[in-house]
Amino acid sequence: MPKVKLSKKLVESAAAGDGDEVFWDTALPGFGLRVKSSGSKSYVVQYRNRQTGRSRRKTIGQHGPLMTLYQAREIARGYLADALRGGDPVMEAQARRKAKSMRDLADDYMTNHALPKKRPRSAAMDRSLLDRVVLPAFGRQSVDEVSHKDIQRLHNSLRDTPYQANRVLALLSKMFELAIRWGLRGDNPVKGVPRFAEEKRYRWLSDNELDRLREALDAHPNQRAANAIRLQLLTGARTGEVLTSQWSDFDLDRGVWVKPSHHTKQKRTEHLPLSAATVALLRSIAHGRTDDSPFVFPGRKPGHPIKDLKRFWTSVTSTAGLKDYRLHDNRHTHASHLVSSGHSLPIVGRLLGHTNPMTTQRYAHLADDPLRQAAEVMGQKLTNTEKK
Image (cartoon, rainbow, N blue to C red; front, side):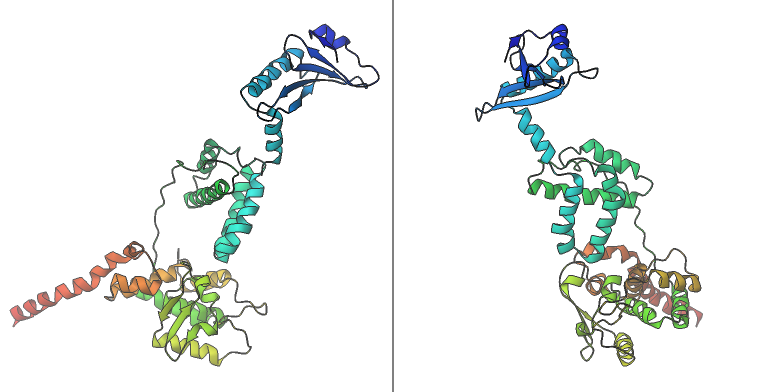
């Protein structure tokens, strides 16, 4: 293969014989012009891997308006400098082509983490965030290409929905944490991205509102769904725990609900004492059973429980005239009425399945009501004495 000083004129006039031919540049050893028998011309660079001693050749690009001799020589100079420092541009390019994309990471995250280790509802929420937010933004990028700036830009674009923005950030943080463990990159680009402030929202029903909800439940034609809401109000259980509950979970003679660990948020078995009213409700439901479903609230699909109560809940709250009141708020209603009746925060926390006492502190201000009533006792006695 001839060695010549490559020039614009030589590149234009160079021609191959019967097969491909490479003209190596004497001005920059390792840089050359490859001419195919078809007349196609492209620039190449050849170097030796300093670790393995293996000779490598890489195509820089095809000669033409978008790749001149000067441009190709500058690119070749960079590749050769990298090789001199111990790099291997060919291996690096191959690694980039083989690198997993964010779409691949999302699939691995769902398969190896979310589906086997998270509650079905949480896994479904992750899948939704991936499909609606994460993959449209990063799906085509490789895992190691996503930068801190990219994450910050995506988070900022969601500022009108701060709760969702922060959930996306938490999801990405977990995904990149796993990517580090799986050897896909060395750092977590989510670290250092500040979350948006979230205004905590706690809504519960007053006695009057609770009466209206009870009347709406009694009047609704779907009493199976109504009973699910009644059980939630009576126990303070999460919606998912209620809908997935099975008859085998309840000991009605002892008045205990044993919640399986795979149905609870904390992934631990919980033993919840049941009130007489709750036991009576469950006995009434059992008495009216028309099938052998293991679920307390069987759905339309055989062998499955009711999937959700969204449509039913919208109808009931509309009838009851309740505004800005979510299904999950029934849990807050249960807790708030217990605390305001004088029950201690630790007791209420135990009933709700809280592992962190600070979670129950949101109801602390309600504990003032029984204290205030107690403080009024002496006031009333003294007032009555003065009137006599």
